Image: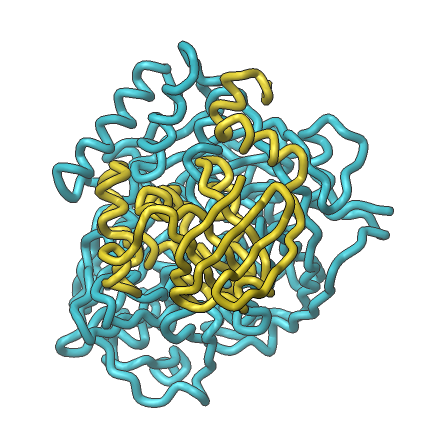
Length: 164
Length: 421
């Protein structure tokens, strides 16, 4: 998969409570969740995010609660890819399971600034910062995970008999 | 090469003789858990399958605890969706208002988890059951849906950090202080993707309440799971609560650990995690004069009977400070009843605290104790992120029940040693 978009940049330890505050967890409606995405650390996010934008962040992105509402809110807000130095483990598997593209690449996460144009080719493990001209390499997902993603997420993989 | 305790449980549940760190496996599950926030998303995912059935009606459980008793109309709809699903699929262990408690206090109490189990729950604090010698980890709603349908989950086998415990906790120091101390030492991603395995002669002085609290907050260090070696204290607890026959796994002598950390329990002091991360741990020499507006004693971390006993011992015959709102939340109906019979609720109410029905409510800023801008709370809960308990400009200080109780009396963050000695 290839992704191109404007970068929106955050720091370390962005937790699921700021990605989608618990006061909005009385719904699982994707659009409604997206309308409150990031509001406790960045009130401007929902107004400036455009379809295809790429989120870049520091260490331990998505730490805290297991709420799948967090990757759902990010995906529904239009973000096409999240690049971070590292991800909290539940967020990591939730993103894969719901089909939000994520990639762990400390160098790229460090080298991307707010507003940079970023291009990512995850099949070949290449991230390019068009604005700065820098290029970064990432490791591909393990085959098992690639299968889940290629089959449209975990539930579709079960439906197709990939996981029995 | 030998295996860690976690690796042995995962190998057994994947039908393999051995596994190693980094290996991807598909493991059979002994229990799949969800709550009123995460289950509705899982139910929608589950419905994507063709005429789906739950893999085992006795091995799926839903607990209405986060926004229950229903905090608003939307919460009521979510609980109804769970109720209807469990009714339709004859789910044995559905816990609604009147039977429910905070899930991670409730499941061990009901004997639904035993040593050697492999458990997933769509709640990050599912790691709590590691205290019983189970592999237990938090997942999202889609994993829960998959688990409900096929009784399996995929895992990347974790490496581990070994915590070798020695000594005995001093008076007024508890499991909460131990885990805040550890998170302060290794950081909120110090155990990322890994297991935290607790062993050593110091275990014998830790109650099940202490162990459940420590395992509960393993996720706050980023861990996949926290797990305790099984001993007589574990086995007695499982037997007393009617749990399934325990299967005891012990790490191999030659198991490889990323790191071994020695913890002398006798050196642990009352510890408080400052806003806005659980790793901001401080002891009383570094705290100063911090006035508070609210105290919460409860949650899946510290709402057990022993926690209420520790708080009541300090609050007995004393009054809560003026202008401090003190909210006590027994974690389950049984704990509520036991606390009532032991006279603890009377102590709390006479001191000026309120006692609530079991709910996660304020811990995640749901309801029952939301903070206004600029307000500060000392709480026995598990997270102090920005806006966790209310307004983004409010502050949450994480502490033990003893510290929370002492602070309730003085209106500022206070060591129990200061009040009691």
